[in-house]
Length: 426
Image: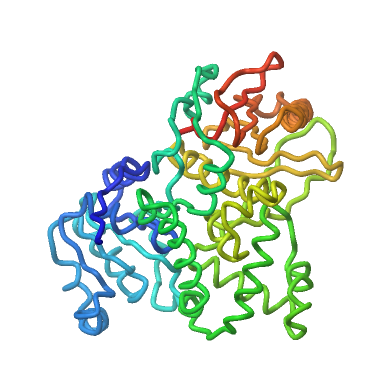
């Protein structure tokens, strides 16, 4: 029985409209299946699907012979999978220059062009960039949204936000992921969507990223190792060593090339380190933390489901962190911010630092649940906040422990906010 999919509003909707108002062209990037094209279709007045099987060959030929013809149409004009014809980039830039109008083009792509030799201009001043990811829990309807991250930055105390996510439901959401097509499906069918996405990456998408054919079993082993290292600063040598038990010929260079291909198709989105001004000369670890763009990619790579997570709370905690990072990134983008991690030589860490462009920032520890873990997270947040030199930068806007299991949000006596992911929004 076919299911008619209805468009669910995305946080990116307002961001796209604003960017079109101020720039001639907007490039929407992100992994396949995260909803880029569907979101762009809501606002586009005309559309060119570059990979339409019936017209793909003609489109590519026209892009070579007369690319401006492909740009004809009511604006904003959507050019879907533009990276199939990289030369369109400069053509659009030229058109934007000579039309003297904003909101002309929307480009969507699920891969960075393998070759940029046909692109001669950076696009500065003509293009704006918008990153989309799989849906956050608020967008999928699995968070009540009663606690606003933006309001916390505005100095608001935590409201009486309720959450209604059991451990079993949380495990399901980790495995289902934020793929728009999966939302609203029967649970067992919804879980299949992430597996289908993973299979597509392994069998074809990773090869199309850079045009290099890869060993399918090796890709699976690498993605499995990456899944086991979620939230860790594992260098390529560690991942290579993890794989060598079944693949003795793999080396660090091969691992690096495979990881780069996965980044090109937005499957991997590592988290950079945060470097604040500190009162003491503490050495800060600068390596990025390893993350998939969605936790369901990790569960698919590991071949596990919701029941497996409930029976292995350590693994569930790691992948819950991946889900929280996904949501925080979605929410931070709408606030003109980015998400970083902190770790120093003394072992002090902070799972997520949401840093806004205006210099405001909030410190967040991610814990699956339990009073002991919440206490540990709060202590870590206070230890880091005391290290920050507030004569050279702002004091943190908030200290927050983001939890999985918990019925409501509240503020502790020490000022730390405890917020279940099931009631957070942008």
